[in-house]
Image 1 (cartoon, one colour):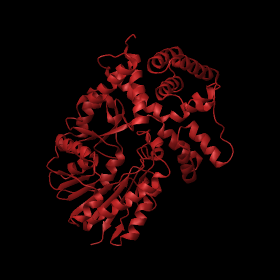
Image 2: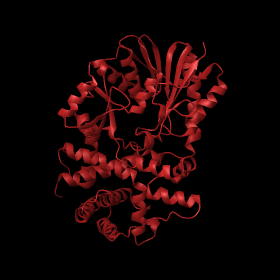
Image 3: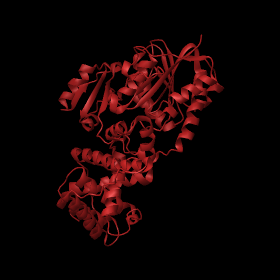
Image 4: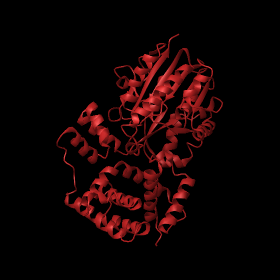
Amino acid sequence: MKENYSLVSLAVVVVRLMRIEMGGAFSDVLNGDGEDRLDKEMEYVKRTLGFSIPSLRPENLKLVTEEVAGIVRWKKYLDYVISNVYDKDQNEFERMEPILKQVLRLGSYELLKLEVPAYAVVNEAVKLANAASRAGAGKLANALLRAVASHKEKNTLPVPEVIGNLRSQARALGTIHSHPVWMVRRWTDRYGTEDTLKLMEWNNTRPFYALRANNATGTSRDDLIEQLKKLEVSYVKSPLLEDFVRVTSGLQEVLRSGLIQQGRCTVQDESGGLVVELLDPQPGDLVIDCCAAPGGKSLYIASRLKGKGKVIAVDINKARLQLLKDSAKKAGVSEQVSVYNVDARDMIRGKTGLADRVLLDAPCSGLGVLSKRADLRWRRTLESFEELTKLQDELLDGACKMVRPGGVLVYSTCSIEPDENIDRITSFLARNQNFILEPLEREVPREMVSREGCFYSLPYTHGIDGAFAAKLRHKA
């Protein structure tokens, strides 16, 4: 088979989609294009499809990453279109072999969302289907994708009608905007249809990323901006935090530049930076960061200690803690950060009441970061909330024992769901009479303070990841 960059790039897209759907991999761009990962993918392409090239060009890797994220976001809608143009039973698509299904999603995405010319899409999809799947797969891919292209050209693409009862409407909106029905119903009940549509549109938009200039290595925001200019990366200064820059395009160039590896900056959403602002670590403090890995908040906290004080980073995942340890060294704060491989729920078995400040950035549904982690919308279920909220309560009960009298406990999530946010705080305060909720004043922008006095960011309203944080003080 003729070797060419375009076809092999698409083959890598298919391999990554397979890994996400069947192997539990993530679609987040920040999981990177490391050499080990790419080598394995290229070997799989060679073994399965029978062609390879020595490496992919940087611009091809960028397109692969963006295309994978887009297909994962739009999976439900793409499946609906493909199923409805299929002459056979609509369930036939669901029963297809996984690799052919991914090829069809890839082709449909390029036709419907990227507007790639039909002849190019069909030609390459047929080659991939013939190489990767059963006899006749190429013929099927040709017929289906030509049908999709024809419907698009004639403006006759199948669209579910938003009519009937609320359940039927949620099902239709979930298909059109590619979200699970239970999420649509949940958000519609809380925000109304108009704002739910805004939220889904945000989740389906290509995200921007923020960088934090690392003062601990002597890098100011102005220094970082000069480096971004040299890399020809588009940016704007964060309107929320003085050390942060929003990268509007070109994150892959930053990742390849060595700036992060050199410890000069780190990728961190402003919502996470605002959580650290709320914690307000001071030089000389002893800070415990529960569930710390991979360590973005730990490193920011450490940088604010100005060489005085300590961050104890606790996490149950040993491998991710090692990444945190390595990152602390690159960031110039290794003297301030100690890592411990322990479950935060078990910390109460040791000494208690030691820390000036404790941060519990709890495991959660992640429904505030669906623009960056599109795969989460397909992994989460309504039933998973019961398990998550139980864990969050247990972690809160463990973390609070580490706070000295007069000290601060900050509970945060990257969720927009009350079950994981204010409901957990209300439940915690009912169980722990020696803590009070400290209303926020100038720690975060006024428009991000909830009626209960907590930090709450909503993506389509505030323009950053969805997040929540509550500041709790131990009564002296």
